[in-house]
Length: 61
Image 1 (cartoon, rainbow, N blue to C red):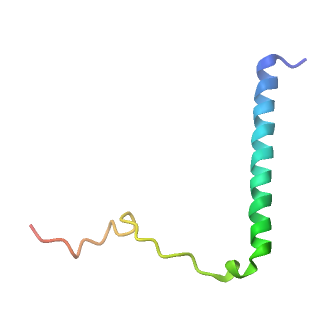
Image 2 (cartoon, rainbow, N blue to C red):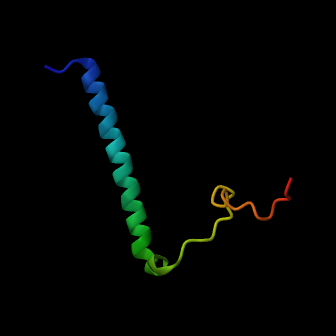
Image 3 (cartoon, helix red, strand yellow):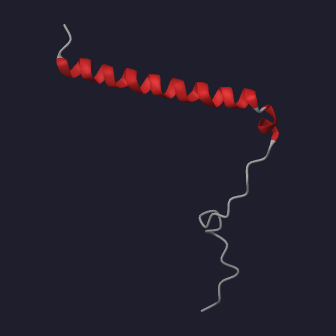
């Protein structure tokens, strides 16, 4: 017999599975509606973390 805690844990997992299944379905439907987006390159992001090793533009101490 399942106790209350196990039942609530399973209920939470089921809700999470339903949420992500619905989200994936929406994303797949969006890709089917706009197949040209599959062949686009991702946008260039100006992220300071990607330039962490390059300090050539900094003034020397």
